[in-house]
Amino acid sequence: MALVFAIGVAVFADFLASDLPVACRVAGKTYFFPNVTHPPALEGKDCTHLRAEAEPGDWSYDPLVHFGPRERAGDGAPALSRPGAVFGHPLGTDEEARDVFARLVHGTRTSLGVGLIAAVLFVGLGVVLGGLAGFYGGLADALVGRLIETLTPFPTLILVLVVEALLEHPSLDSMLLAIGLTRWTEVARVVRAEVLLVASQDYTLAARALGLRPIRVLVRHIAPNAAAPVLVTAAFGVAQVVLIESSLEFLRVGVPASVSWGEMLSEARGAPEAYWLLVFPGLAIFVVVAALNLLGEGWRDALDPALVRAAEAGTRVSARPSHPAL
Image (cartoon, rainbow, N blue to C red; front, side, top):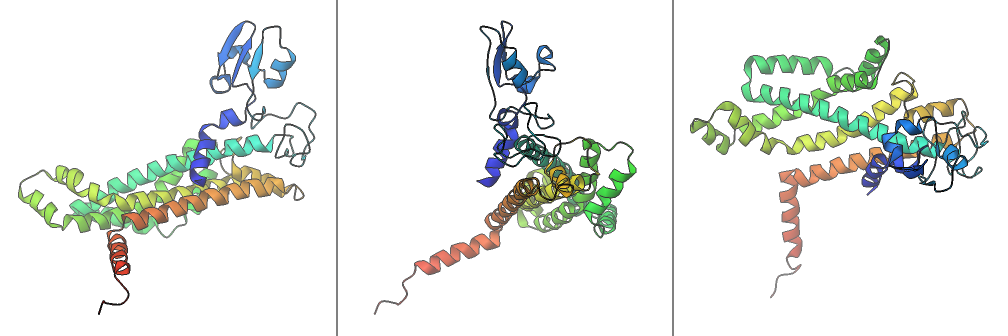
């Protein structure tokens, strides 16, 4: 439930906190979802200006909080205001008088977006390399194995830090590429082991005996039966990427001018009395990472045939009477 809620917040972040209305009518023209499309006619305006400059017939429907994640509050809100101390800022403001709720909501989109995209990259690379190594063996297996042995001892965070530090202008693409190129080894190792196991099963040997092409055997018979561990690894991988992205932003070597939970935690270092800059993003990271780990544990229990058989056997045993009838 927590993960579904976080995904919903990430998807509808612009409707929860934005500097532009959800819908409005300005100068006789109606705009739907300008907070998402950002029409040129409303450039330089926000909810406060639109209300102040409203003419007869104009109207607007504002989001829950009418401030963007990078917008400084223009209503006289002080910097580092406590949660609820200033109307319109339910979670307070930071040192630059920016709304903490807006930054927290849009930080959810950043963290989950980076986690999902990076997971697609490293899972895709790991599946391809691990599948080729396990199915074809020989030189392919040797090359992939040496790459895995070379990259596995190095912590992913350290490798990504080095890559980001060497770049003159780090960007979101460089961060995703660095994470994807360093996290694929675990997936490749798991896929290789599963492919070797499935390739020795009778139905795979029968498919080969019928003369099917190797690529068809791999795609139609081996890949579907080796997919369960990939889902589990992907769930754990997204959680680790969220931690890595937050760590990079906390150390301020991530994407410049980004809105992230790690960046909010970094701001708390300069204002130790502002507990709300530490508690809210820290709690968000904890909840999302814990939910992703629980999802991975649930998938592993549900998709592991041995555990399923053990659960079924336990159910049948518990259904028997405690004492045999005399």
